[in-house]
Length: 404
View (tube, rainbow, N blue to C red):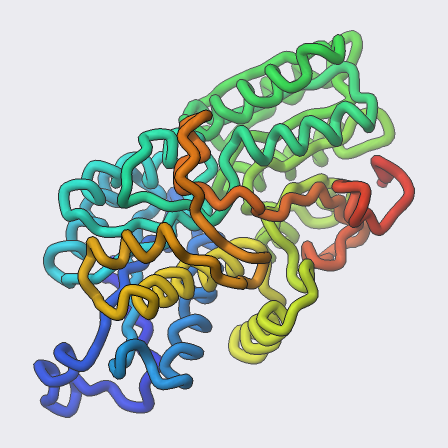
């Protein structure tokens, strides 16, 4: 698939024969997103659409350093090899000044050597594996959670909810293994029994694992679905169709961000009622001017509410823009240096990148990513309208778990 270009200008200068002049008057920023299978296409589209709102806003306000901004979004398909090729095209052929995006940890970790080779800033948007920032590369920043951050919070909710028999079905990727590892470590002191299964990312039939859990004695009271992309949705649909979960005896927690996309309801149907998810942000939380303005612009352009992934797409590009303004330059090294000093109020809070090195995953990791545990209570419900179970200070219901 050819890269998708998003231009927030009234006309396409290339068509008017002014391509060279346009190049000189344009700042190019690269974007990565899975826009075709086997990647999580809807997550990729949310990232891309969030970037679109950002670049339109920047250009409507005069651009950067007196120039228009162009974001060039390359499709990775969620495949490491394609991700590397996309990153290399952006960094060399397109000559972008920085790169942001992506929704698969396997791609984010695969492109790290390219970020180092080209000495270009890479702001990871929706890649949760600890390994992304644990490499401690000066070029790499992250505006979403790390496994050790998000699942330690989720594990706190699991403890409070009192689950005792937990089953994890995870893809055999860095992210999937991280789901198992963090949950296991954080729950080992509770006495809970944890059983884990792993499978290839390409697996689409989870019937054997789900039937094994259905026949288990005791049955799991919580299943953690550690998959990404369309196969996460298939697992959730199969769990509902088989009568495994969600139900009165067994809850199911969707660890992948695809449970936040409209396609979730298209695939899972009414079986999605009762499913749990953990977004790294919700529109209106915090309820700030920038969050409200982004939500309004996104809904007006795309006729759907934004989710955490779209917010990450927007925040990632805007953080790059803030670093360019702070540096007063499009020099790649200057942008990295400025990024380390950024304190920018984004859609989900004030974003910054501390130089913490212990533990390693905290290096240039935004530490204050908002993390929620939500539960869908009716069909076709957007994440922003779901019940918030955790953190308790922001809960919208009294119960730690609602039974469908």
